[in-house]
Length: 353
Image (cartoon, rainbow, N blue to C red; front, top):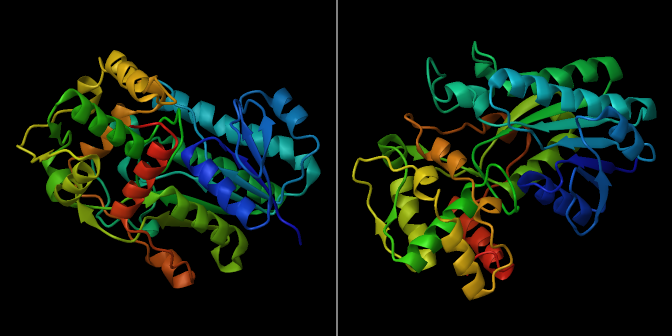
């Protein structure tokens, strides 16, 4: 049976990595986005998930067997996040329903399933770490839960299988992405080198000293492919991280070494990047001009607010992978190599000097 993928959010970190993997595996791949980018092997589909009419028109000639949901939209409040992000999934699956072609839907969420949404991030009573899939939902409103429920309801109605994927902070390449620690740290390190600033850790003592893990977008793409085609993985939620654990006190120096700068040890003071990079747009534009970079707009590359949320957590965060390991998913990615690979790609594409 032939496989045709529809990747929703194809221009993002997860979507672009998934498109590259599936195209390389011989799938027919369509990538839906409001503003598609040119991706090898991916057919662009232009549509607005909040506009049912545009979805109906854009998807009329497409009959995907597998749908990969890797997008969301930020709003000022969690109530609005729930309304908008659930509606986008409902609109999409409603538009695909007449074709009766969908066999599996894979939804990418994240560790806010366990940590809570942005409004209550890392506060209140949290599950014990390492996080495990059977710990269930927090007793709090969360747009991830609304996204899941939209998929579950459509699955019960239309008969497709589903999988939910919960990565930790994702390392990967995408310009204009709202949650992009790897590129944010690359821009921060570049600014520190070019402007002779100290490369100071911006986060908390808990993150500097505690154990943590991360998720390479390429490894996440491999789990999406596996869960979408492995019968034993049907109708299950999975954590997905690289498989190693590290402390930022260890990783910070390795990032500094790659950029040829000195890492400043954490001194107990939290120094958020959002405040420190708020006025760096003109400096970045000058660096881009001097080095002939492809993107002079710092805001299209860096998302310091999200990096601050991750590096400022007051608790240790590690994630258990036993569930998918037992079912046969054994991919592994050292996190320091994931950072180095990303930095190398950013430099090759003239996004950092």
